[in-house]
Each structure stands twice: as C-alpha cells, then as structure tokens.
Image: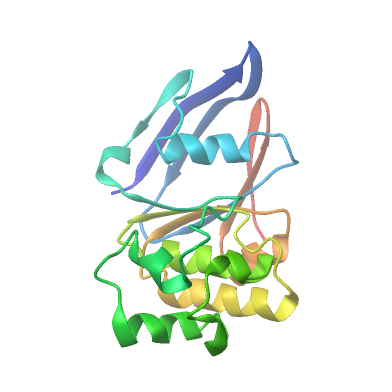
Length: 199
C-alpha cells in the first residue's frame, strides 16, 4: 500500500526542522532524500519509523507497514556475533542460509567473532544485513553506505538491489552516485520547499 504524506511538519522549541512536506511513496519504488546536514532528514525518517511524532500533518498507510531501519548509528549488540544480531529481529533466519547471506558482505573468519571486534565498515554491513533480512516491509535507511570503502560500498549496493525484494526503500545520502546506482527517485528540501529532481 502506498504511503501518503500530507503537509508534514516538525519543530523543536519553535524552530522549524521542516514544514509542508507532502509526497507519495509508491510500492516497489526506491526513493533517495538529499539535503544538507541539519535539514531534518533523520527526523523525517524517525517519524516514518514511529519513533517521533510530527507537529502537523498526517501519514496515510503507515499502519500497514513494518519498518526495517538502518540508523546512522549501527545499534548492534556488541557482545553478539553478526548472525546473533540478525536473529534478534528475524529468529527464523538462521543456519546455513543465514551464513550464506553473511558471506555476501563479510569475510568468513569474522562470522564467529563478536561485532565489537569489527571495523566500522564491517559493523555497517551487519546493520544493512539485519535490515534487509528482517520481515520489515518498508526499508528506511539513514546514510546506509557511510564509512564503507569503494569496493565494500559497491558490494553493499549490489546486495540491496538483490535483497530489496520489491519493498519500498527510502534512504538518505550525500552522494548522488548512490541514488543513481539504486535507480532511485530523488528529492531534496529546505525548511519550506520540497523539490523532486531527476538523475
């Protein structure tokens, strides 16, 4: 079911973060949000995740969705390995099938180690795996490829394309080439204006 976002606005201490945001997010589409730091991208995603409430406006269709997020922070349990972190959100994903998925983005010698021993880029890949292997129906990714080297970033983008499985994806980035690689419909905003643009 599409999401209809109508005249959404959010302020903190009477300072507007964004205002008058209206858009439709269609099923089986990829959307990219670009805007300067501090423009409200993360706040917007947190509202879609149900972690914050808007001050004005409405979102129709959100009650039928289950969000699968990638936060700017990795939010992993450091003492657990990658498979255990993923099983926390999808207990039925386990065994050889899960190991095969992990090997798409992680080296084999890392799989039995706690994620506290991982590099920042490896933890980022676990966060992506966790979201894509979850039963969530709406993928909401906040700068999902941040901190990855070029090869790891390309591998992660290819994995997203392979494992999106027709789910709507909305992600934020400062790198327009990531939007191109995912064939995303792209939009940006300032506090009072939302603009769609082609790639």
